[in-house]
Image (cartoon, rainbow, N blue to C red; front, side):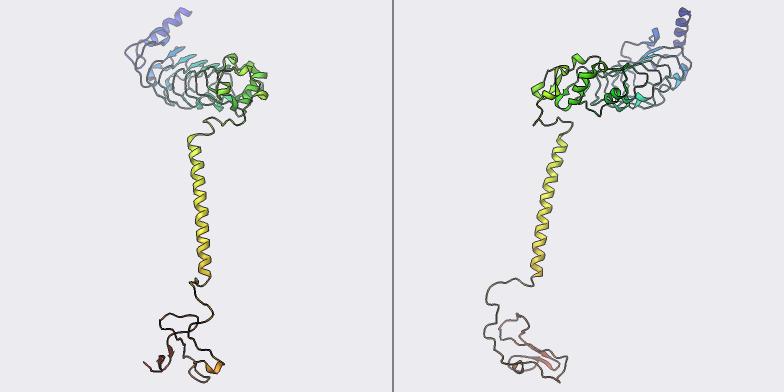
Length: 345
């Protein structure tokens, strides 16, 4: 029976090559660089008996939503897309592969794992050698996946916001993760160190995990550390928390605050000066020089009662046109402007 299936598999591959004239017949496992730039399968693969596919060592970059659609409801159980320069995988790209049990995406440039929540029967996924900086939240509910490989990524911090917290809480004892060759910041991963003390069975390679920073603990095995004995006071968080952008932002914010306060002070002082009426420039405020002293109201050079109410008279002995208080250099009446010598204009 196995021979018959194998023969049928070979026959199914003969009519249309997998996007290349170089056909690898044995389970469609191509080991050489075929320089493929797309993972899209032609319609002729609908109903194929393929069980293993390898698209490794290519330049695919992106896997789109419908690339595997012709393989819908196929018998494919293993898929390898290693060293393929993968940058992005559409969230629903693997949905047609309902029988998929093992997926290998090693040595690519993936940074997110939205597609991880779409598998129904997958039991193992290998994401070694990618660019994950933290464990994807899609791992919170692992489903049927029993093994996650995240070795040699860019993971530096694992804390209580990690999916591992849910694993511990929900007691997913049959699930393991592999994390060797990540650069851990041990002072920022104290929760993870405690996690390893009581629940190392979740981490398949726990004895291989080592600190990269801070320098005081560089090279130390995480399983040998006691968080209560670690001296992490005064150690700045790593770049995850104190990035260059944040430092610049804090600096700019401080400068902006100082400028704003300076402007407020200047405006306040200016308003106080305006409300004071005038600015004293020296001299005696009590009286003008050579101004006559009036003994009574009768002595003031103003019109007597009964004169034109609209008349205005002012008096000043100053030589200039400047005024002080209510004294003027001229007297203006309805009849004209009275000068000091009494002449009219």
